[in-house]
Length: 495
Image 1 (cartoon, helix red, strand yellow):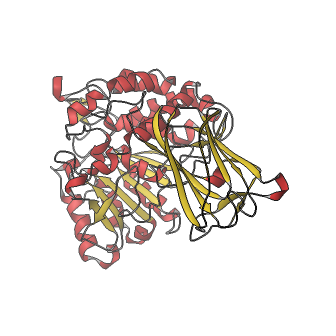
Image 2 (tube, helix red, strand yellow):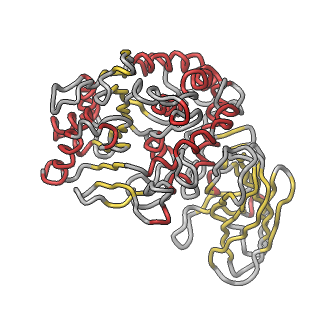
Image 3 (cartoon, one colour):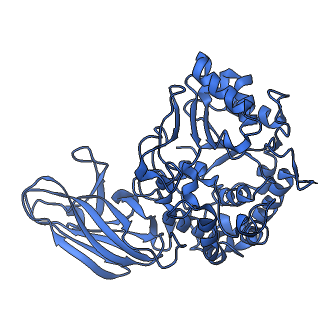
């Protein structure tokens, strides 16, 4: 599958620096995303902060200068990382005037042209990190692009409450105009806050609690990490000081990109368990969604925020690994193959490779995605994904292994296997070369069963599943899952 086409509309240079944090995060995933544009939309502040003109485009170019310095180290992991120049050429100025409808900006025109180059089968994801003005203007000026666009706005109304006309016009069009009734649109007013608030929904305490994690895992990791620390970690608000302008990690817009990076199907926002959140249907059209309202998914006052919060350990472990790449300290060689399998327990295995074979994420890894020796891939049973089995040609014995990419800690390690009725195959699971647990597939069930044990796994450990046949039972299994049971030793504070 092709990398998703993504265009980001951002208010870089505006009232706080979390867009800058999110953009640096986005750049270290540039091998997994086909970036089609970066539009600077500044209708809220008009491009002036504290009486001083600020330029989001200049900030973006500075980030790309740092990215260029880190590019050789990033490409050591995946040659698909694009050049800095190719990304610079995709910067466009959006609107700086909130008057509606106004004149179509160069950024809005870029959205139209990129959407026309997309298709319903290969859509353009428009991620709105700031005011929705340019995205709305593009869509309302060119109804032919609606089938080709998937819109993900972060607080589409709240980003520019002083100029609500653009948001209201788009809502009205989706509600009442047949040409827009099928627009695919997620508007997250609060779900995304799960990436930085604390357990009680406190924003400032949550941001500040993550500062030690930033200093250990991001700061001074390559040129991008240095820029992150020196310009975008302290006093996150550009217009306030003190407790209302905390130091730490926010990245409040990042969940829109995470929605595309994990391995959960992004066709149905109400299902799955995406790093970017889960949503409910929004009654303005056929394909619109917004925050879930169940009390169990709230953090403080923030509806739906827990659907992101519960994945933070995985999200940040993955980000830390990418920053290690930028610093030239991550495991070298080979193509990572993307973050497609780093989802929080619902997707397939990571196609990437490290020194110990394919990478095993926190979550689910399909057996066939691992480094197989003596196993072969066969069709699934009872609606499952493909299985692996030992076979006679290798003496009925096989191993499957990969390298754990999550943070160090205690995990419930579970193997889903197929227990047949014509033998008693044996399975053994090793972690870093030591036997963690084993079992025999007893009984005559002819169905899937699971074997689960709590084990300690360190980041970089090799996990190996060994199978040995017995009689006519060929040690078949489907997948393994690695799910956290306690706080890890090297993640940030989740309290």
